[in-house]
Image (cartoon, rainbow, N blue to C red):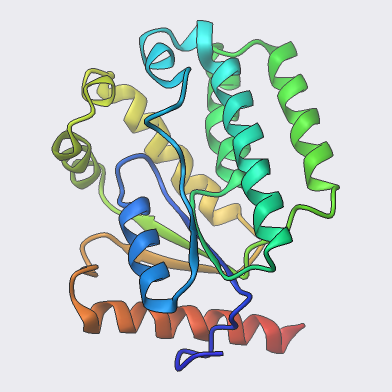
Length: 217
């Protein structure tokens, strides 16, 4: 236990739409707590760039790849006894991305059913620890689009704005229905990872969320 009353074995997951700053906050929180990080691997993903050029052709391949990688990370977190800050949750893969492509017809019904059955099978294993708290980063669509442009990934910049609009809307609905663990909501305009006072405040809020959840249990 540390000064923020966050257990050493805690699992903190950072969630939010593409470009909102999950990786940056994940690294900053882990450094403050002395936790390990579980980061989403983008640079070595064999499907990501292909996917942005042809959603219908590659959406199922991409989501299966992410599901497998995410489950390997879940297994590692379980075997190492926690103490992790995790960049993006497995819940977003199924609740946002796969469902969005199934609804829009860029993933077939059969592929989506196959994906969903694999997800459900993984959830039922002992290697699937729920987070102690999910930090949800939110912000206005213009702010998020600006961050996507600043990040400079050509495949994201060239994607139609309507795609990001749909994703932003789905995230807003998804987080309001999310119940797997306590949620701490942060607006991207209300904190600065380079400001010690701002980071300290976030960690205090995280500790309070975990503490209140433990008290209820």
